[in-house]
Length: 321
Length: 235
Image (cartoon, rainbow over all chains, first blue to last red; front, side, top):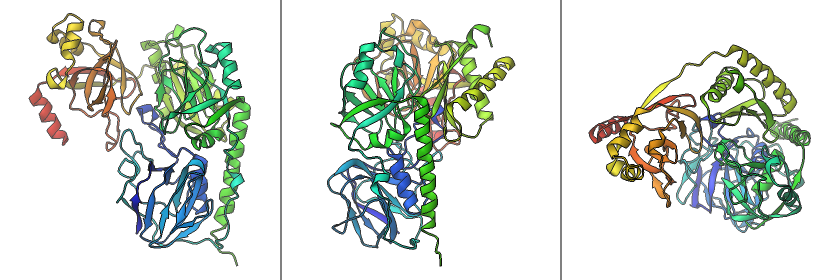
């Protein structure tokens, strides 16, 4: 029993917490663009937080349930409907055999996550079920889903929570209405001209059409180095903001290459990566500078919140009399 | 480790990574430091450690700040580096031969590389196969080696119009660099030959054929030998 794709959607690929341990071999980490949304989706179902879910982009897929499953939809609001009726997000939902799940307009954000209790049957590659699109491995046959694909559930019979009528309140999730993206200085920050540094925080930057799982190219003031510098390639990370030779910034996203040769002007805080992942081409963002201590403090609090949530959600699946 | 290159600085790359930066240049001495740190991390993981990426003159370590704060990992790495620098043992090196069919359909740009450098195609192959190359780092694509040591006599600029498709195993030259494409990708390198070896195969236990620190030699083979190896590998 599993799901069958009626439509693939724009870009629907399985992603988990990422492929860890192979960066030294040039293998990108991949994984969900909005890690928090994926984690919460899994936790709602009593799954391990990092289990692979289906990342649906802007125009979501349409899929038929060939068996019963407990599912959760999180992340961006892509107007999910089951058999024509709106589906609640951020809570466990029963999908009965024969039900059709479809997506409509993207109302907020641009990436929704479909998690299934127990997960779906994928062959992990190098320890991960994330789809590495450019290299064509991982996830489901190393590619985005298309019409006719069939993916089996790992779990035949859904394990229901003690009560069904509950969910997460959406304000637990980073709001995307104010597009402030918090950043730290990148390693080459000080090499940029004062004017460029001022522009960086005063101006808004627009996410260009060149925005995908590898990175977002931004449009805004040209950023210039004090002195032109030939850089040796070195490591980058999810959220590194590089500046190209023409002076435009690129934010590296989940499928970014492991190393880069452009100056790294900023680094987006880990806690704001999910928010950035939900913004699409045309959106305006503004950078706000934080220091390392603040950044780590925020990340530690987020981790604590997730752990508390995990504990309380596990409790939902334990019968108590 | 020599005195002038064991100087290093530590700095953050965001809230979850720290960089050990050696003097910013491509040199074998600095590469040995990068290797020593990498080898140490392969043997000695610690709580909160996620993984690392070695590069020409740096090693970046990804970590979990809810287990280890920046100040804590900084102290830990300083202690580790002190020990490593005192130790200074030279690590063993793996030597790997990469068979290549040069020219013809396998290396459509060999003639251009020869003409550009006023050499015969035979001379280009002789020069390319005479050097031993050091794998400084892996990056850009899975298993793609940044090789050092190419003879400048065969240096050739990239193609003005990149090809939309370059086959996995293609051997190319770009400026003063040479390399092998591990996966099919677009690219602007001058393609001089084709290797039957797979530089990256996710089905292998160790997916990447090369790792930083390996020494590589290219060996010219005939088309018949190429087909033979390809058949044996089952591609």
